[in-house]
Amino acid sequence: MITQGDSTHATSYAKVQDNLSYVVTSPPYYGLVTYVQDQWLRNWFVGGPETIDYGRGKQLSHESPEAFAKSLGKVWNHCGDRLKPDGKMIVRFGSIRSRDHAPLDILRQSLASSRHDWRIEGWLDVGTADAGKRQADTMGTLSSPTTEFDVTIGFSRARR
Image (cartoon, rainbow, N blue to C red):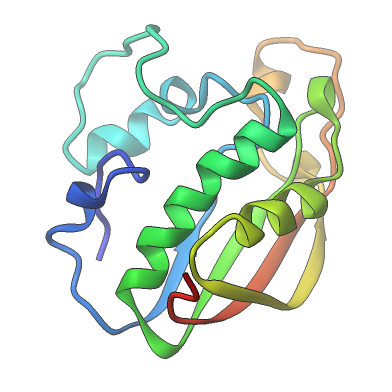
């Protein structure tokens, strides 16, 4: 199932069934404040508008790595609410060059801020986005991509 909505709000999960085996997601990286605009075509395919709104709107907090992790923890709360007891999350996570904070540290902190007891079971260094088509290349940006990780995460339902 593919769904669209503000992942920090429980109402966005109303149509998502309980007892999911997996949640597969790639949340915005810390500092990436144009995530929605950069993903407009994908957004349009799942019912979003056909035009790009460059307003900031509601997003995860990007004030600091700690604030970002805390707001991402709210997303993990809702994901955990829908997973079955032996369910897993698969998360593609990384960083952007302008805010090159340790992405696995931010991810760990976000999991710790969730009401569920998440545990990282493994991760795979999947390299950089150099193998694909990067928007930065199209726009002529000189930045180089950072390493991304695919992280497998298990959990125990609500601990608080």
